[in-house]
Image (cartoon, rainbow over the protein chains, first blue to last red):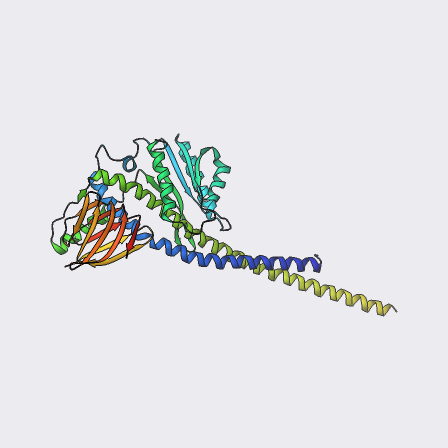
Length: 303
Length: 86
């Protein structure tokens, strides 16, 4: 049985751990609110962008001069995986999940005889993947020490990827990130960035038919100024950055949520542990007292 | 009759309001949009978006690049860099 002193030290140490985890939980909760707000504020832009893109893509389908970003390079031999993770840990399986999904996808693609390259966004993912598949890593970026992520960060990554595409360093680009579904659920999601998965123009069609019915107006085809190709050439890189931006924001929000949950669990576990240890401590103390009493009494009787 | 104008930046929905007319700086020249304008998608250059109520400019926004989607009922401007000019 552990000595009383050792037990006391143990209880104190768990208590200070609990203080830290509960403070981290609070901090994560307040950061989460901000991150969630930022992610929501970015949604309208992405939606409008998507709508515009579907109109453009619909009118540009089948053109031989379509930009590479829309239709791909024509082969699908080299895959670039963009793994988005957080820069910090202590958030349960948040970063590991993305790391594992990336590794699994890389192995699957390799088994199909494709070449795989990995571009890591976020320090934790970089560390994980460098350990596992360092030879596939072609680049990484992280935001350590940064308070907020803004659009320029996403644009920098987008530009880099566009350059790599221009130099034909890959054919297909897939992004793997944690989608923020709710505070308790972050879902690892794979999104194909290049060639662009054009959102089927269903929504626009629905809009059009709606106006048809209500206004009885003829569906008006869009005019483009300058031409479709020129607009696409400018819109596609923007769209790429926008998708990355969204992933970064969802990742940031998801990270805070995961950390909050993880720290909440840790705090609860520490509480349980303290209870157990305290009980143990009291029992030991009681046993010691009883033993001493017996010693005294039997000593007195012997006299 | 008014057309509804939306200006969105990556960070947020900057503006959403009905307007009488809006002038947007297309890459090939400025473009005044009235309600009922034919549908089109325009790439923007850099310049100012001017919002008219009647004959007066009520708000101005500076943009540098971006796109505008125009339909008879609405105008949507998406721009990476946009800020209100006082």
